[in-house]
Image (cartoon, rainbow, N blue to C red; front, side, top):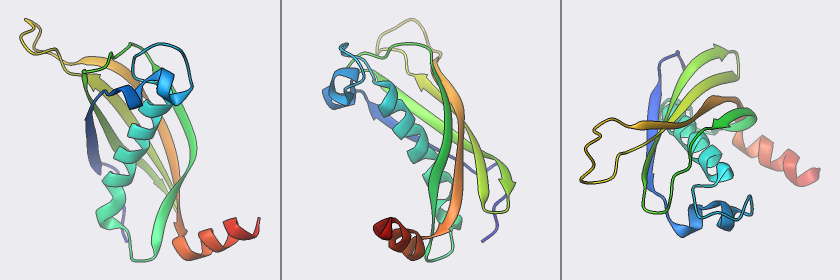
Length: 136
């Protein structure tokens, strides 16, 4: 297993009712919920390093900083990109950016940044981690 900064991945969704602040319990508006945006960023980070993980290893999230700048209503296409920016032993640092695609037929052809932030994940032995978690 060798990780180097620059590993990159993305996830893409069309915002559904199940992705909203209402569904997440984080508000009462029908737009992409901040907890869902964070989950998408984590998924993109996991996907970035997944192909490079040795068997039996996984990563767990330990820290997140997120700025959710703009609302994305149901039906909006959102792409979240995560890039590995730092490797310090078992600790991996990521930056992510979330963009909203312009609606079909819109004169705008550029994506709108809706959020950004950083994540930290730590590499662990999957079986040992699960065993410890079940004891605690």
